[in-house]
Amino acid sequence: MTTSATERPEGHPLADIIPALPPGAPTLARHLRWALDTIARKVPGAVDSDDFDAARQVLAGLPGVPSGTVAMEGRTFWREEDGRLTPENLVRAEKLLEDAFVRAVAGGALAISASLSRFKVLSFSEASALIDAIARDYGVQIGGKAGNTAFFTFDRAFKVQIQVQERVTVGPTIQIAKEALNEYLREADASDEVKAIINSAFGLDDQGRVRVAELVRLKRLNIQHSRWRAAMAAIDDAMETAGKAIYLRVYRRREDGRFDLIPLDLASA
Image (cartoon, rainbow, N blue to C red):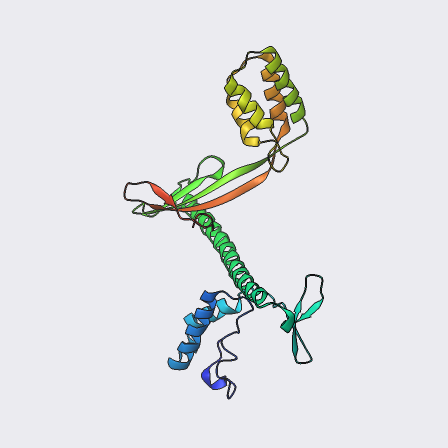
């Protein structure tokens, strides 16, 4: 419930209404607080509106980046990595600027991460409710293989796509497949392309894992050699489903009819 103007402490008219910003709050949050402060002072009754309260709750829910300082006996100390305290007058000015920059960016990153988490939960919940409602009320099934689904606005200007992908891991029997493929290469006249795919599949990636995508490429090749078929059977035995990953992507249609992905990551934005 929003505190009314008559309930505010004398001399502190907004202290109990607009929450203080946490350390490292992003610039946009500071702008929002300034706007709320201005509205509360200049627009009669604004603090009692639902919109004002919703904006206030957003500020109150901002994750904070803790300050790196400690106040003791009227002096300010900066906490070192090992817990030691350094007097502020001994910290170089450029390190103070660097600290302020990193805390501001980290605060913004935490806020964006929380917003994306809420967006993801809300979007999947809405999609599930829509699928259930259409299937129940209209007898129409939405979705494709493995739960993949696409939704469009009526004018097809925007598209929401939900994709379900299985996470596949490789068990120890993959070594049997590797040996069978080595025997195949010794016995058969394999093309350079096939050799390259085999080398790519079993050239461990940067995390020490066999490349599952390249194993799938191997299985698509139409080779009838007995050693090859034995290797493919061993790959089938080695590949195990470890779970499912669900992805949500939003697209905007261009004038030529193709859809552009709306980026939700820093690298693509």
